[in-house]
Image (cartoon, one colour):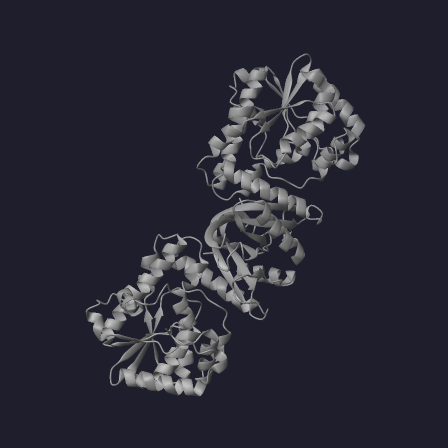
Length: 320
Length: 320
């Protein structure tokens, strides 16, 4: 049973001191490793780990090719300013190969998870010589797994590390007593830049969740450009989340005065408290017109733009 | 060279009297036939023809299964009130069979045209014993064909009637000197109900043009229901044209608390003078919310609704 620490009873400096000591004691003179995604949980664990271990912690950022424009560089840049070197591992080809030909959303997610753990991060962990794995697991993640009993064994199995061999490995989860609000407090106290906290939710499968149908380098490029436009134009509207979705359906358009089949981008912008229910944001018609013109003007191949007007339920926040 | 009669120089009663006499003289004691679509051109020709020929003109309405809700009955009902019997020919199965497996928009159009002329109307013309074919061709149609020289031969070839045999057939095109505005004047003078004039433009391939991907009985049913909702809710907004488009892409939705893939309806509502350029209508956000709720509430299988925000160009009015 994990003892929860609620945000209102969290003493940030005491928590940080305790966890830094625990991590340092556990790892000793060994080497630890962690994967940074740029989210609040993995960013906070990275800060804590480096405070405890310095150069004994190796932090990798896996560039899976599904990130938003400039995201790996931005995240690595943040940490470099804080004196922490993040190694960007280019694994785009492996993820694209794993996603080739897949159109089913569940299978897409599975391919990304498998490639991350089994192929890429599993290999990095084994090659690094690290026996300690720092993870940003929070209490909500534990609640969301069925039991958590076989948890550690499962993570190593996911990494393709043999249970026998795994005896030498250990997982460290310093945030496991906290929920998201507590993690944000710790992250802030550790000096993480506010940009990391203010960011809108972004799905695990990243831009692959924003593509209906097959994920290819070309289609990723299209939805990445559209995402940059939509995030730029909707960032100050006070919305909970906003996104560009690339459809697979082709629609008729006109190019150079001739009929030409083109692609459609659907924009969703949600008002919501906790993502359980959501309604489309009441954007002005002028904003919608400018948004459509910007997407069409800046993203090659797009001839049509729509705005979602359905609520969740029966819709969901993401389309894929 | 066809001599144009401009709307401002059109004397409706003289035009009607002349054409009625011409048609009666040409057909004599024979039988004529025409296909009524419910559009202004074919409706006006039906009125003129019956004025000239009475029971010697057989008017058929081909129910291709691609019509809007209640459309064949509505059109036949209009004419019955005017004393004209329209025979509704149920050809739904033939059109559905011809459309089976076709996803390419151009091939859809071609399948519909071929089925109409070669299969259905060709058969009806041959079986009717009619040697005169009344057509609502207007001057704009002539402009839009390349030359018009081989016109009559082409129509019979389209109907699957042998050129040798076709010698006995004759086409009568009483509206060929007019443009749309002139036809509306003649139609009104002949007592056609205003509902036929006020209707928004509707494409030749009918609801098949409102379905991205394969046209099936089930998908027609879905887009027909959505079209009824959209036309009902947007009819008083002063828009040029408005429509519901059924997408082929599946999007995630929630049904009974579980993830479930559903379908998306895209609503387009256009401001335009002549359809050459068009902008989305500035509907209030409240209208958009009500529209989405009505489509979701009334059309089974729909979990997502979008509103088009792109202009023409680069979009087109219709998606298919």
